Image 1 (cartoon, each protein chain N blue to C red):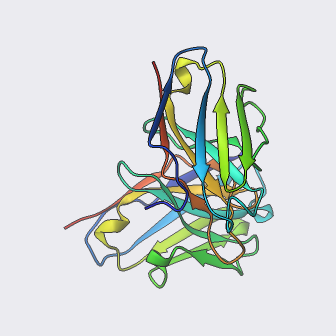
Image 2 (cartoon, rainbow over the protein chains, first blue to last red):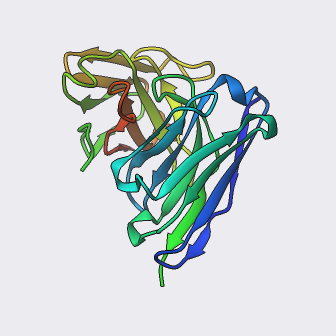
Length: 118
Length: 111
């Protein structure tokens, strides 16, 4: 069965950087679009970024454009989210998501908490 | 503020049916048949319950069903059980140049 495991979350000061990783197993990563969905404390879900199967096409929510970069390494079965210039409003649980087309997520990671605070 | 509008809360007694609405526009829910529904229990990752407006993934009870009329999609849960108590989110495809859009979530309470 497919499994997604995130890592890399933690406490960071405003303006700092973090790199999230998602290790995929149980399926062929290169066959799927992938993405990151976040959930601020006590709030709803929000698509942050997604990336096509080969890594050539990426989309971002407006609030992270120019600060976050999504990437993937299909050979290593891994998805990444590089987060720079972090703000307090980026505080959230970040979920790695397997997009089985049209933003319909059939597998989710367990989530990794990112806290941006001084 | 979320792009798709859901009621903040709904409730029902065990055995009853409830329907959760998800209202968008002619640019998302109304135009595309790519609405999905997710169940989220506290502290857990979301779980896909419905895809493509009406399709139930393997393992999801047939008590869960989806539909759409115009710009509003709906999730109906029949024969409510205590384990159904959770927050439910809808999500819709909104075109090739934007990410998917979520509703704000609906908390289901089983009385």
